[in-house]
Length: 439
Image (cartoon, rainbow, N blue to C red; front, side):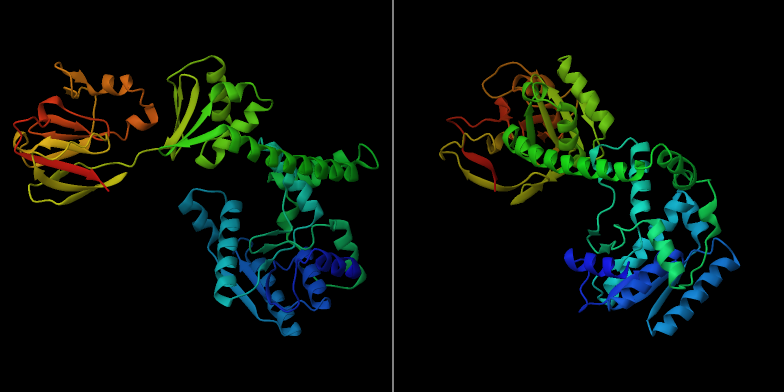
């Protein structure tokens, strides 16, 4: 196993003998095997151990065992004590999740503080298979088949090509000591049920069941990589960006094979889950225009024959403009406040606004529009609901929420970025202009 291990880390350039790493060790058989292999391969490392204080004296004995082992090897050891039960209760998570969060957060802080090249963990081939099946039980997509990678950021797993049996044989043959964690034999947790019950039964179906599974996972992983490349091409060709929105033709989506997966991969970075992606696809198939979907950060609107995605607008507290203000800032833009002579040429850009200054009364208010708001759009004689005005302009629902209005004495003078009110316009008789110009 030594030769295979050294060949593996050299061929894959996983570990560099000129750098020092942090070995995460529980004192169990896997991490003690890894510590021995690293020592023989002349990979410098320090030892990190978390005493979760979950198993009484056994937890303290594990710690003492590792301290003595590190001392024999003349290795620096770092130990972190954690009240895991309290940590889990405070966050309302399981003890397992709490232990994972505690150790990986501490590992990374320690690695960073010590300026070490990475954190080495002892996950092996059997852990990989268990992880993939756990992902499948959670309803994962194809990426769940990928399992764990040999290197991800600062986390390094050099034992992934080796099985639990390989490790056990090596440790027994070389007289390497380790600490046994009795909780590994319990079947209270899903992983242990897989390890002790489900997977042994599956391996018993045929002599080559285990190797066939590994080969299948490898092919599926390669298929997944191919899909990812094709998805990126599809996304760049079909999804357009405009005014902070991402726009996809519903027809382009529906006529593409694998539409559900494409849609999910597009929306996942914006906080949408696979169930929402399927609901969105179903809505497109039934042509239910106007429906709105929401994640924690984004809105997606089915608008006629388009899917329009945009960030959820930030909460906006109304602001006031005094007569002496020279500028103001909104979440989406900054504006200059200028006062000009009435003979200036009118700026017709909808991004800016020019008013007859004498028709306005300060202070002015800027707030988000609300249902029931009405104004008389420039060029019209009758009042119109702001909601109807935005519908007429075909403003997507995802953009409507961010629309703001400028108010003078309770009247809307400007639907910002779209149109001023007719009553506030400049005329031939205008002597002074108020010019709000987007920077």
